[in-house]
Length: 353
Ligand code: IPM
Ligand code: MN
Image 1 (cartoon, rainbow, N blue to C red):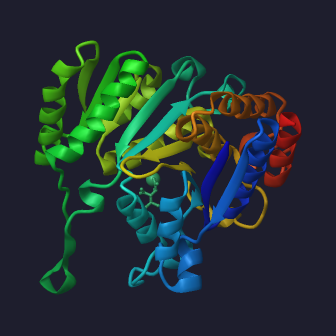
Image 2 (image 1 turned 30 degrees about the vertical axis):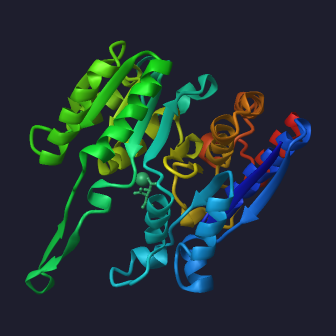
């Protein structure tokens, strides 16, 4: 099979972790007789430096032409510390999500048996956790009207949702729940927010179409608590953009390291695969970042975008072996021997071939 994949390394540790995912994907392609056409494109601070904008038109065109997109990370501290910056790398990410219609962000959280003791949470609480957040990605407060009033002394951001936006995300949630345990949790703040009330109303109106799915409605503050108390009591959770952003960072701690969790963004035109961690600028260029979240994102890509299950399974299986044999980066080494980002990539390639 010929796979056209847009490759967007982005900023910080993005290029280093992407390089490992490329190595692993190429090894998989070789083993299973596929040919990958990597289509390189710029995003984030790297694109601002090169062409003055974080999501250039050429990048958008490459993304549309490709069958799937593999993405590293975006963000650079020189913009974080400059509130007056006119162009920010993150704007590129938001524009990319919006322009590509990537309205559903699939963020799984699961535990690895060999890493169960690395989590700051107690083993008996997290064992067996295997949940998926479906985070709405192209609406809400991220894209609402914002601005300043009162000579800059008052600021506002607005959270707007249409029934249509909620419905298409919720349908994905119901469908996913039916493939799993038929349990769906709708996370909102309907005791306070009007937009949340529309979420709840819309999800309730869909229940009759999915009679096998049992839906629970929970407030976001309570979910934040139960997520660390009894994460294994959840299965599929659907939520709006900002709640999903916050809860998925929280949930990633369960697995033991943020450097482990992959994600997929799907929707109208194409699909994009990326680690849930950020650009981790402190580690950039040091060859110490954990590449596994990106490599596992590539596995999600083989599985979802190309329907190549054996290929995805093999990636997951070699990743599991590396963890079992403690071929791990600094974040998981606990002061014991750690491996460089590129060494982990090389080790996985050797296991595949
Ligand atoms: C994420 C990130 C982004 C977000 C940032 C970088 C804009 O935190 O993908 O979760 O808030 O969506
Ligand atoms: Mn985030």
